[in-house]
Figure 1 (tube, one colour):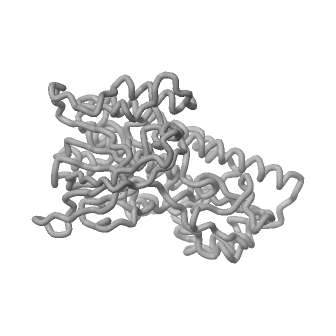
Figure 2 (cartoon, rainbow, N blue to C red; figure 1 turned 135 degrees about the vertical axis):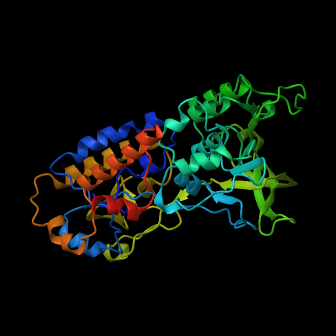
Figure 3 (cartoon, helix red, strand yellow; figure 1 turned 180 degrees about the vertical axis):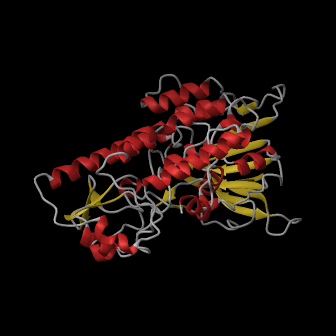
Length: 428
C-alpha cells in the first residue's frame, strides 16, 4: 500500500471529527490487516513524483487506485479569496493535524458571526467544532491538536449560519449529525421555518421523513419569537439561498465583511419535498454580515501523473476514474490489472462505512480476476531501491508511540505530529 504521508489511516485520522472517536474504531480492523505478512505499508511516497505509474505497472500484477478526493470545489464567485474565507477541508485538516494545513492559523477573533456555505456533514462538523466550547466534558482529551484548542479557546464566534441552495429535504447532511447539532450543549438552535417542511400526509423516503420529524420538533413560523431565551451561541440553517459574492470590508483591507445571496425557488412547486428537487435563482437578494466564512460544497479528485500512459482517461468533470464496479475502463473495455475504489471510483459521497463497503466490493473483483493465476513480478523488491526515504509499518509504530507519549503529558489520547520532518526524525 503506497501512501503519500509517512503515516497510515488517511481520512479516518485526518477527516473524522475529534469528538467522534467511535467512528475511528475501524482503525482496529485496519491494524489487523497491517499485521498480515502479506501486507506491506510504504509511506512517504508520492506516486507520480517519487515513482512513476509505468514503473509500478511493470512490477505489479494489479494496481488499485484509492487515493480519494484531495481538492475542494470552489464557488467561482467574486471575492472568494478575501481573507477570512476558508475551505472546510482545510479547517478540518487543521484541527485534525494534517501536515498540509498545519500553518493555516484561521482567524476566529475578527467577529461574532461565521457563515458556512454548504449543508453536508462536513459543514455540520465545522459548526459543531466552532460552537462546542473547548471545556465541554471530554473534548480536551480527544486527539484534536493543541494549536486548535488554543485558537478555539480564543474564538469570538457566537453565531453560525449554515447556508444551502435547496431546502431541508435536499441537503446532504444525515440525521445523526443534525440531531447532534440541535442538541449541542450551550448553543441555541434556530428552528427551521415550518413552511419549508411537508405536511403529515406527504409520503417521503425514510431518511427525509426522519429529518422532517426532527425539524418539526423545533419548527416555528416565519415570525420569530422575541421572548425566546438567549444563548451564548446560536446556530441555524438558511435554506433556498445561493451565494452571489463575498464583500470586502471598508475598514480592513481585503477582509470579508458580508456575503450576498440570491433567494432560490424550486423549479416546480410539486417537487419542493422531492429529495432531488432542483432550484433556480430569483431576483430577491439579501446579505449576511460575517467576518468569517467556510466553503463546504464538496471535494474533487484529480488525476495522477502518467495515468494516460496506462490507458486511463480520467473524467475531470466528475472527478472520477471511469470504471464498471471498480474495474477501470478504457471506453467500454476493462484495462486488465487496473482497479479503483472509494471517492475516486464513485465521487465524494457517503460516509466511512460506505467507502469500506465499496472497497470490499472492488477487492472481491480483484480476487475473482486473479484466481488461479501465478505472478511473475517482483513488486516492492524491484522498486525499493528508488525509494530510500519510504516509511514502513514499524516506522509508523514509532511515530504512534511518540504521539501517545506527547498526548499522555497533555492528558489526552495523543498529540498528533504535524511536521513530516519531525515524523522522519523520530524514525531515523
